[in-house]
Amino acid sequence: MFSCSGTTEKIETTQVFEVQKGESAQAVGKRLKENGLIKSQLLWYLMCRFDSTPIKAGTYRVPVDVSQRTIHTILTKVQQTKVTIPEGSTLNAIARLLASVQICTEEDFLKATRDTDLLAQYSILGTSFEGFLFPDTYFFSVPCDAQTVIHAMVNNFMEHFTQNIKPQERYEKVTIASLVEREYKIPEEAPIIAGVFYNRLAIGMPLQTDATIEYIITEIQGKPHPERILYSDLQIDNPYNTYRYKGLPPGPIGAPGDRALQAALHPQTHTYLYYRLIDPQAGRHRFSRTFNEHRGISP
Image (tube, rainbow, N blue to C red; front, side, top):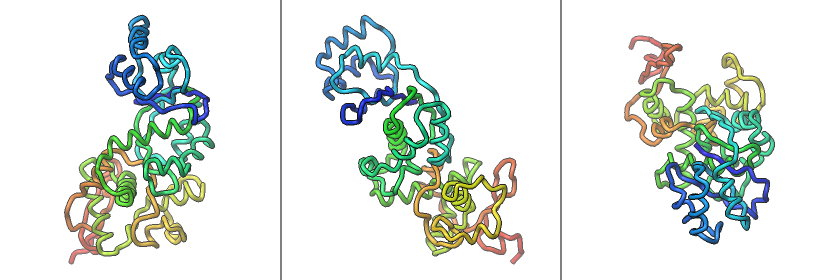
């Protein structure tokens, strides 16, 4: 769970500061002093002894050159709003959720998700933070600076994606994870589906996943979510169309959760190339190695 101060100070006069869950007030004071946000660690300790209100875990944008009392108020008394980001959420969906509880506007959030300086700070190669805002429950003040919201979500993502790999490989893994997130329902099937994607990529076979078609329709074309994918939809000329274009789509199509990320990082090794939904209610698939087997035709 994360929070922020909601200050309207300009970014140049604030500093992002994270309070870890379970961190003591004394430990927080030590880091505030190290970051140059307070002048006296002893005064901080005495202040916390006098006012025993717990410091809340979260990510804050703390103004620089304000009193220690102001900083203490930010970390203890700011009213927070809860928002839960579901797994698979797109940037547009997250923006609508945040705006619905008045944390920040859709416009401000989407603009911040495409901030090139912010993307470079995290070595993210795409043109936005699509796929890199971890789905979780957060607590933010109202209103909250959009960049602080993104810092909280990306830092959370980095805590779950701990592999030390190059930015290009990380981007590819997150893209695969976003596809897995949209395709699996039964947890044990996630690494199997990831294995199917890797097998298809290895032989130059199109990924052919409907989730990318839905992404084109809803996120790129801005149309309502389709009740079903039509044959004409498979002909859309867009690089996200994994029926027309081989290889990975240009980027993630949503925010993968931890299970999908782990599946992309550790796919199951097998020889399956196809899967078909056989139990819509449970979300169970049947996996097969050949197209005839996929169609139920005996060899």
